[in-house]
Length: 192
Image (tube, rainbow, N blue to C red):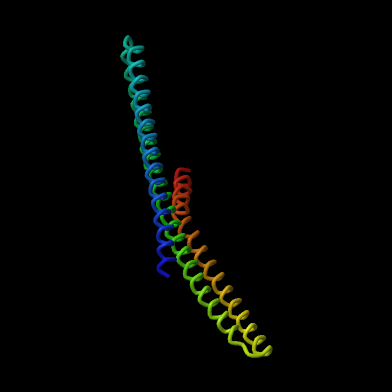
């Protein structure tokens, strides 16, 4: 059990480290890209304001109207950018939660598989011993029938347990995405 558990722990640790590294890389790249987009948007707006200001220098009324319009557009643009940043952050958090849930589910599945393998090996050892102690053909048939029945029942029970673990794993992994999708649909519907 300790060798199998150690192997399962090593597999789970390697998987968890890979998930953490990938998540950190994705988060760093995403935030860098978002910062670049914000900087570029601000530079474009500043350049537009400077160009409009220079072109309208002779006509103060036109200048004031354009500046106000540009200011309003910039406010709306920055508000939209802030909303986009907030949604991006929430989506990234949902992805991290999903990957974490998937890693935990995979770890549970791994431990369950190792435990089943250990029990199956013990059952197989006991089967060989009981077959070795058979004294007649009738007794061999009875022992073989009992062993086949026991192994089949154990296999069916394990498949049921594995199915439950997989279902639970997928539910937990997709729940954060379902929550984000629901929020997005509600946002679109409220904007109508």
